[in-house]
Length: 487
Ligand code: NDP
Ligand code: BG6
Image (cartoon, rainbow, N blue to C red):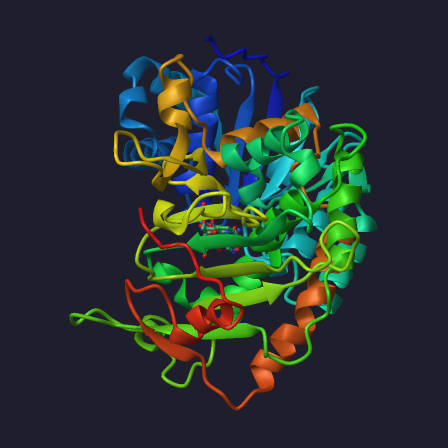
């Protein structure tokens, strides 16, 4: 199978924060890969804007180094790399002051290309930069604005940000990134659910016992301790990535695969989440160092911190489809394995026709693996092969995308590749709308408030374990268990 690549129109992409971590590790490698894929550039321009005192040459040199570290090694072809570097430019701009705005405008003013401003900077700059884009003349009616997370730190600040952006851009111009939506398997969730007639009739509380959504990381807070300690797992992961995954699993089929049709359905899920009172269905944890490795408190350099590096929540959706089916969500750092998956656990067979000696049936589980080893597994009960009468055993029906699609010549692109190209194409389907972001905060704000006022500290858990004991209990008390964390 050959991937169909439709080249996008030439564009001017201005990356505010082009010298930062996200640009270096994700954004610029993604653009390089899209150029290699024949989808973007070479007539386009990428203009990095930041405060560092660099010229275009030294910026290109930095990017070259970054690509060596973060682009796929087999794709580092010197000629193509050189071609990519020529599309890069650098402007020194102070987001909060006067410096550099005229130079940026000069770079853009004679260009007829479509214009994107990607704000890969701290969120306090989103408002000031947007305003300067308007007053400096850089904004055109077709300009697109991309904003990174975090989109506020509660409902009030998210609303304020949305209102501020709305005074400068129309909603159709604003692309709020949740990079989980760009992951190949996450998009595949929609294909799986809505392009196959098989699942829809059983995709409801009558047949689904429960759903588990896990986003587990092996890494700690890394160099982002300061940011992380102010946000914790609830704000950093649960409010956005996990709730978005929940929406895609739980939403009704949209009438069309169009931005507002999809986002309307996700919004309905967010608005149907049962409010949680107190922390009865919430477990928070903080990692403890093992074998001399630093623990959370050392990593964030805040010995008194009560911020959680792990959270598990039992969520219920109050609507016809899901009433009575719990969704268990967990995410954390320094866990046993890097593993993100969604497991839909179906109800047991209503009656077993087999004798006890057969070993009993097992509930079917549809596991959608987001990373690593993207793929889908359906666990089925079959007869154990060979003689000896009827003995039942559980087997996986396995599809690893890399194997299945790799064998056909397709590779899985990074989420940012897809998302940046969607911005250029003007497709907002995989971006969050203002009301979605606000609905997610509206639901999670009381949980965060309870977490911030409780006298209980987050429960310690050993690094590289499955998380705190109470998280296991959250399911055990319902007679269920988490799936093992395994790479
Ligand atoms: P960094 O701190 O690494 O980079 C910040 C960037 O902002 C630098 O390029 C810096 O450039 C620039 N900057 C700072 N102050 C100014 C200013 N006054 N005017 C112009 N530019 C300025 O941050 P990250 O790259 O990690 O994060 C960027 C955004 O992306 C944040 O909103 C973050 O929450 C979000 N994000 C990051 C992720 C990651 O993995 N890094 C993951 C998901 C979201 P200079 O120093 O040259 O001025
Ligand atoms: C980011 C969070 O949004 O997602 C990080 O801020 C987290 O804390 C990261 O590590 C995880 O993304 P991925 O794609 O590596 O699963």
